[in-house]
Length: 319
Ligand code: BTN
Image (cartoon, rainbow, N blue to C red; front, side, top):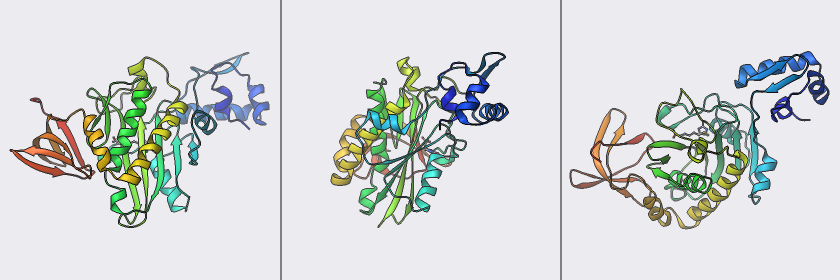
């Protein structure tokens, strides 16, 4: 049976009676569900006497069938949620419940989307991609080296193919267009990283979002860059394929074979930067990354290497 949202997504008028019949519930139950959609998902629904109910603008919903229709079947279990706290949190619960990997958790919106360094990831309904891939990793530390950078590279290539030719990387795993962030990556790990563990590859991509008062940094979206509304199912399908290809390469050959390609796409290669770790700050010039994906900086003429999830880079005014 379809959901109320699926019936309304075309942006046309639907009478309360027709909706009730399609869902096998009363007109007053439809009314209550409409109120919930407005309150919980922030949707605007026109209610016109004699005509019925209409979404203020049509929406394209996520669909496992459509995602699979656009790509080869990778054998990943795809789980779609209308609303969830965080796809990464849900992926971690999936692992705890003993779910088998690879599995993909995606959502129309997140109420507590997580960013790096304890930040919030703004996640409005049906506009962007909130994507968490669960992997089982057996090969010890080597299989984790540079993994988050590899995910960033896959997201960057997907974006370039899908209307954002100017997408590039910022260490460790942001995807930017110029100075504006278009995608972010958050890896979370459970188990023993030296032996068998599960890793959640969380990817957030700004797709059709055109305005947001909430994002606390410069940002852009695929739609703002390409001027077109983007089919998120198609974008997810392509991300799945590109990511699967990079993960296979990383698994069989290690990060060192991807290091060079990553550096070539690093927007801040050779730039003067400040590296921020909590309250401390180091000024240097970006030399590149090492075989594990750590950042190599020239600091006062000497090479120093930095790694860790809590670090972040800022361009210096003199760069
Ligand atoms: C960053 O701060 O750059 C990382 C952002 C990662 C956001 C994605 S959206 C899907 C997944 N679920 C989350 O809660 N976070 C990641």
